[in-house]
Length: 377
Image (cartoon, rainbow, N blue to C red; front, side, top):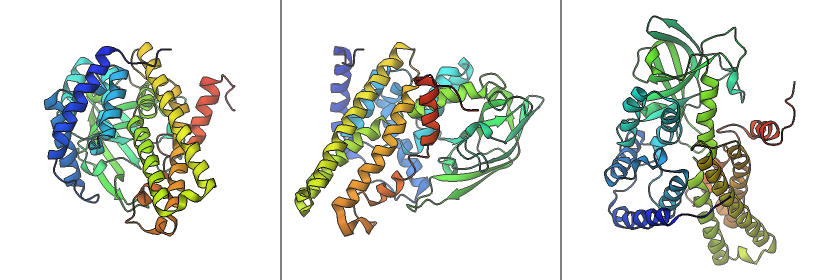
């Protein structure tokens, strides 16, 4: 399988790198992590700059290799992360591009690309645990609308979102994977209540969302009624396959910074720490090659990442936690100081074996869909 880049793709890389070098020094300071309206405005402003420069649509119209180059170069240059645009650009947007009607693509994709609308993800539920298909939020038809009742939890960016990619159960009598529907719900609809959740790191990028007979137009359904689980697998393939690409690059950069810090504070003299950092270096180099393999596979299969994304997500989640555990060893007593670099990242890394599908779920996917082992009863 060819993991190299074409001359055209390398030309795209050079052009993007030159543009980033010009615009990044002129960016305003980032707002406080707790200022979500400010963060929304900042993230949308950056997205508008990408749009005006012709780079906004690489997540959907560019080849998987071009997306990989874009994410790699923007992270290396220290460009703003997608932030509040995460769900729209990397989850809902690619799903609508792959599964939506022409009218849906025309309605929802341009505002995301122009930095005008923010999406949140309404998948997880309080009583479902890691079993996403065990959702209980109900929706029933009433003329040209679905009426939705239930609640969601860990809803990313709900407090500043305009739209929600929402999973609902439309046929409670069907097997649990067959009675689900994927809806685009306006967050300003009557009956939607958002309650922010504060994380261990002190941020509030998640929320509980309560839905009290919210009316969602049937025209906002992506895919067929009761076919939402298949559509959701498309969403999750993007989430696990390409959404973390920039973070792999970031982890490789952090690893280099840790080595420099260890040399400066004397921790480099510890052979155990040196071996640990060396092993992590090999780990992230392998993850980067796996990312390239997944992208190459996606190009061969029409642009949607395959089950290799679960292999990547499973190993990356643990490698990230190991990286920031190593950072604590490098910092020593400073690992308890929230103002030191990497300390808050260590706290947030604890969520990675849960977010986007727990490690246990990823093990099952790899066992059943990659290794061909029988499903558990």
